[in-house]
Each structure stands twice: as C-alpha cells, then as structure tokens.
Amino acid sequence: MQKTITFGIPCYNSAEYMDHCISSILQGTGYAQDVQIVVVDDGSTKDNTLEKAQQWESEHPGVVKAVHQENGGHGMAVLKALENAEGTYFKVVDSDDWLDAEALTMLMAKLRHFIEFGTRVDLVISNYVYEHVEDGKQTVIDYHHVLPQRKIFSWDKIGHFNMTQNLLMHALCYRTDVLRDGGVPMPAHTFYVDNIYAYVPLPRCKTIYYLDVDLYRYFIGRGDQSVNETVMISRIDQQLRVTRIMMHAYHLYDDVEERRLRSYMLDYFTLMMAVCSIFSKMSDAEDAMENLVQLWEDLKEFDPKMYRHARMGVVGLATNLPGEWGKKATLGIYHVAQKLVKFN
Image (cartoon, rainbow, N blue to C red; front, side, top):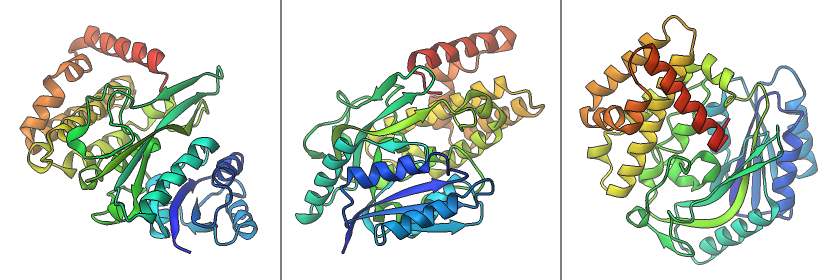
C-alpha cells in the first residue's frame, strides 16, 4: 500500500516518554495502514530506546519501523527517517511531543484527498501548542490572519507574520520529494537544526495549504530540553553554526523571487541573528562575543543587504545595544518577550 504520510520520530534516550508520542500517532490515525512511523534510535546509551522501538515495530508491522544509527544528533536522525520514508508526505514529531487525535484525523483526511485527486500540495501548515509543564497552561500558535483558509495558495497570498508566528518545524508537513529534491543541510551533533528544516525548503514549496487545527503538542519544561535557557546558553556555538548555515543557504534578495516569502525569510533569519546576539551576551564562554562579532562580519561580507536588514532594523538594534547598559537592556527585552510568549 502506498503510504500517505511518514512520521519521523528522532529518539535519543527517549524510553521514558516515546510511548506517548508513538501511541498518539497510532490512535489519531486509527492504526491505518497508509501511515508509516519511522522511529530512529540515535545511538541511545542510557536506556532501552532501541528495544522499545523494536517492540513497537513487532506489534505494528508495516506501520512502525525501528531504525538504529550511531549517534549523530537530531538532524542526522531526521535525515535517517527521511531516508526510510515511504509516505507521500513527511512530518517530524520529536519523541517528547505528541499529536492531537482529532486534528490528526483531519490532517489525514486532507492529505488523502490531495492524493486521491492528484492535487499537488507541497506544504501543509497547521497550528501547534506549547504545553507548559510547570503550570499546565497552553499557548496556541496559529496563522488565522496570515494564511488563506480552505484553499490552496502560493506565497504571494500570505500576510505578515508577527514574531510569535514563525513556521517552526512543528507546523510543517512537507511533501517528501520537496525535502529530498535539494536536500536539507543539517549538520551532525548539532541542536537547533529544526530551524534549517523550517527555512531552507520553503522556496521549493510552490503550493501550500493551511489546515486550521491545533495538531502538534510541543512539550516545554524538561530541564535538559534544548530550548531550556541554561542549555541554550551552553550551546551558543551550535546556535551560531545553524545560523551560519541558514545564512549561506540563500542570498535572499537575489535567490527568492516571491517578495512576501523573501520578507518572511528575512525576518526569520533576523530573529536567528538576534537569538545569537542575546545568548552570546548571556554566555560565560571567553570567545562568545568574539564569535558573535565574527558571525556579523561574515554576514556583512556574504550579503550586505541581508546584513543591513538584520542589523539595522528594530530587532537588530535592540539586541545589539552597545556597552554594559546596552547588554542589560537587551537581556531585559528578551526576558519580557520570554514571559509573554513562554517559548522556553
């Protein structure tokens, strides 16, 4: 049977919570045979992640596939799932997250409709929800006033995204061939590569559909999570590495013809540069600020117009204020945004 969709689940020492993730997909799709779940054990060392994945495969043959690889990091696990994908569509679900059953039923119906009628849709976008473990509250990220609804559209029909509405990995369901055609340049042993996944393939997507359902449930609150503030500070070198890859992916003014997509990607990239600026200032590493300065200089040399947009706009100025006072002001702005949006 041709698979409608492949769900890729990267796992690293995930035995404690991966069952919830896998079962949410199986239950939400009604254990359908046109679904594939590729569970990638990324060289787990502390628990029985691989054995659990293999048990799921034995219980649901033809639907769940357990794959093992030597440890390569989140990006390599995503690429391994993509390599094994048999679905027309592909969606990544992190092992500590889950999908809403009702929303998933609606997504499956829409994807099957596209396939049945031979309608090519390169990207299906849906909402995601921050699930905050510390207080049990939820924050929904939707695109009601940004994207057309109940129609297939192209980038020239999108509106303006505010800073809380970036199209993160959680919102995206790509056609598999879009990801394979041109690849996704995710480095090994690097966190935050989901930003590359949510950025580089976008210009290849010519047809888009927005499904206004709260599908992806994004768990926030584990102390070792990559988005935990302390962890992000300690991994600032990886944040810079990802941002540099995004920088070199496109000369946005020259390579992205559609004006509204270009504007969105410029703002996304600007936000990535701002994140680098903020966490470099928070880092105690001796070379943190030196590396940040080098990143800005590299951007200026690579593309002066992208540099001016990222550095001379409101966000760039606010996150790079000079001196000790400027540093305190920048961090104050960040912490206000953190409380409002609760993104980590």
